[in-house]
Image (tube, rainbow, N blue to C red; front, top):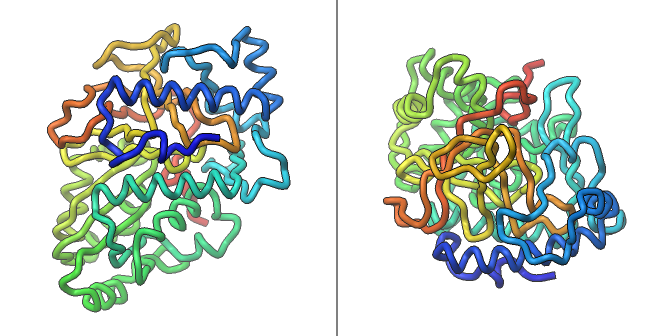
Length: 359
């Protein structure tokens, strides 16, 4: 199996469109054949569609799996003894969840790529890390799903990790301020899930008329926006109010899912979601799944070179988005950049933030 880091090379946003396309098609072709020969369910699906796994496809032609299939079938391309961990996606009570089977090698590659992507925004030094969540998420196996995995994974980018919420999801204001004072003069890294960050940190600080007063920091947040949009809170307001109570921080929303761990799409300084060298996005029209034009809204299809232990390399999601451009974002990063418009109406709610239920 090829090494994605070796295949794509360089900084994570460094490949111009034509060269990236060539390398992506090479890698996805190898992955398609690998999963065809090692995942019986995937092979039956391709055979049923009359799809030849050995064909040379363009990015737009690779067979794609609906993301819901991971809820219905145990799709894995390694033997059970090679499964190091099984990750479950987020879901509200009563919903089925995706089951993602990860080998040690797949986990290692995902971690390497994620580290490259995050380092391109904050540098390679490990910064003091404030997790805007409860430490219980690491201890309670009932809470360990994509949310727990996200926190544990992001913790590798920080040091002296501190959790801002107690076991009852109450903000530990005084303890956080003490921790921040112990790191005075240092840049601070913050991580949280979008709705929970809003509800249990931003709103809690506003209601108590308190601020953290961080002098220099980076906030990364991920998760569904449905509950926030139900409250008429859009990203610009979210960023402004988060900065008003947290301090001088740069806010980076990012998009990703359990079915393609490590292959995240980070929002740049211009407010655009970016594809790295290791991933790509195609927008499919609602009516017939044909490839949409740039600027046209449709289903978001995600392509990734990272999934080797399960056939998640080409999936069509239940999210709506639009391509804004490629290789010409003012931030200077190469690759496609796009905008998300949330979950398609009628689709299941499944974001880590949106599915949090207070007990």
